[in-house]
Image 1 (tube, helix red, strand yellow):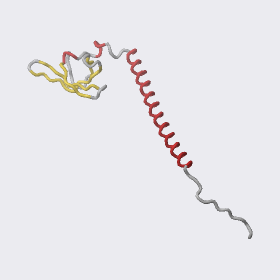
Image 2 (cartoon, rainbow, N blue to C red; image 1 turned 90 degrees about the horizontal axis):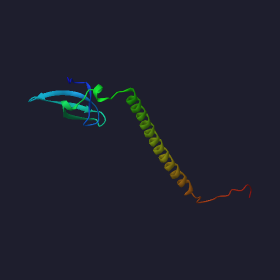
Image 3 (cartoon, rainbow, N blue to C red; image 1 turned 180 degrees about the horizontal axis):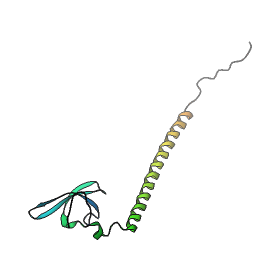
Image 4 (cartoon, rainbow, N blue to C red; image 1 turned 135 degrees about the horizontal axis):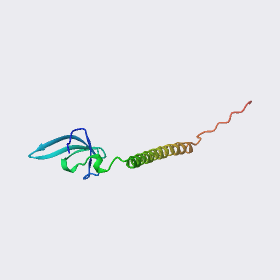
Length: 116
């Protein structure tokens, strides 16, 4: 199998897709620097350990639908958590303002009458 830069493969060692940055042969052993997008890191792995996408069984319509649905659920959960944090911060601010008004007490009351 020919390994060129900027081609996507599957790394069974990391259980994820990886993009080859460069392939290098030294003393008869070929290694690849690959980018692992799930953990946003670059690692060096032996070239024979990567599999083509077709042979790895990734990218079927069911796999893609599953990944897309999982991404939507993860996004919705993230938005829910952010909304809950905003609501909590707003409620705390509202409670602080309510407490400030309760502490206000009149110091002097003046009654003004018409006449005399």
